Length: 251
Ligand SMILES: [Zn+2]
Image 1 (spheres, protein in one colour):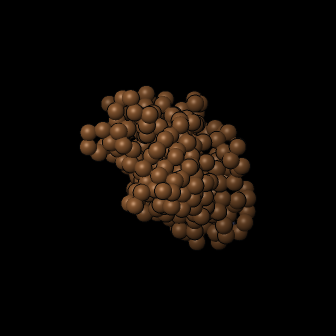
Image 2: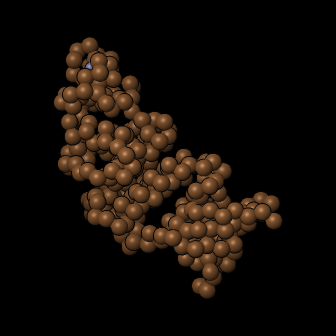
Image 3: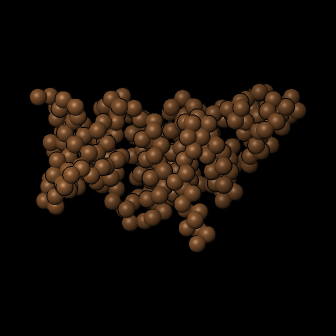
């Protein structure tokens, strides 16, 4: 019987029968895998804690003919704070939606896993604005996937002045206000200098410094508009879970 020992985080759980579960684990060694967790819903099962949504654990998995099954798991970080806060839970659900779409089965994605864990840490252990944390996650993730926009300056003339820049979805990067550059994409959207700086930081900073900056409410709004469309165009899906938060704000 072959087995797999790996760290991983639960990104989906489906109840089966009376006491079992099938979970999707984003593992360090093998990307996304499905595993059955027999008896995991029995209160005294040793699998109860480690098979909860978003729990990060050390797993020992047996490889069956069709699917892995969890032999044991030891919790490293449960991220349990997420479940106590509807806003943070909604942002996490949005992030997990994207992760579920882009992580492939049996393909390691260690940089994506690191970004995902750091993002959950920011959402649960700090007071950082969850909206900004989520925007950082989205743009950095697309950069890891090879969709980094050109944010060092104008993609056409190379000018690095952050005043009077626009973001071009067509050209996938900044273009400046000079007539020769501007006319390359008439649908480019004007952005604030703070938005340009934030995007540069998110794409190019070291992982340890990724979340260490703040932005104004206006910049946060622009980042939101840009990232929603950029995600939709690159991943070919409209992620709508966060719309729920607008209904909360309007209530
Ligand atoms: Zn230019």
